[in-house]
Image (cartoon, rainbow, N blue to C red; front, top):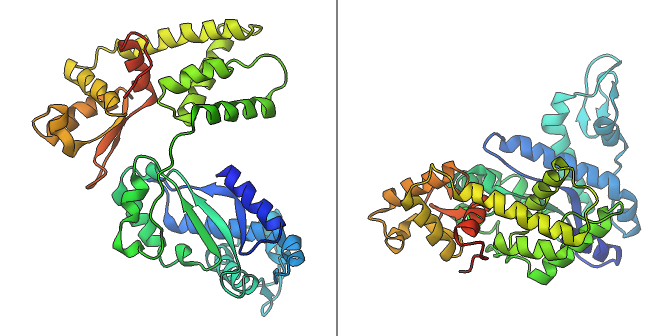
Length: 366
């Protein structure tokens, strides 16, 4: 999404229509979050974007709003309220002149959203000539597709309906596909797009770009050769591979290995993988049936649906789910709690490591 946002902004610089401007920050919902709190964060981010893009919007011929008062309210440690009858950014303030900490609850709850909506209607007129792009990421943090669908349905007629916003909603384990199938969301969300893992060549290029950007000299703990090996073990999951690179880097630090070259790092990585994967593979809390399920999950590409219990040689979905819970408790798989089409599991990074050891240190193939 970072690359897509950069390209959208670059195309905007070239004056292409419709105007698509990234907000510059992503959003997410968890089971602890409230949809109304998320909506306030989004309106605040849109206000910040209007402040950031104000001069450029005017150069491109858009009716950019006057943002000074809202900028003060959001970014000044104190604000000055004035006598009754005055108006602040479209929201009437009352009370005697005073200086107070910038915590105007009334404006935060109603005034900011109203002001930002008016800005978008005025700036992006006629409708369709421009949008801010919002990214709602990691929808799977809501734990089940039922929770995700409920959250999106709550947003259906509010923030999802704003004519000046366009949405990119992301989530793993099929949660977006199932949540977006709600009849109430038809016309709000398009059919989900399955994003395939990066090819090995692209993943290596991404690694090399990170090294080039963040390197301060010396040899990186995991170079292209070691990363290729790790990426394959983890079934081409870039996020998981980078996380394990970080784990290995901390291990090198703890071991006092600071000045190794590429060849030495590769040997150390192989040793670390052997030891770490064996720790997961020799877990005494997993039964033989649990290990069989993990092996068959790997052979099935790394995921399953409990309704396919017969394919995994279980008598019913309940029995299969029971052994999946056993693996989940040891962080070897992740489970999708919930409703039809989502009730299943995927192999977690530690599960791929366990299979790597159990297979005699061979790259998992499916």
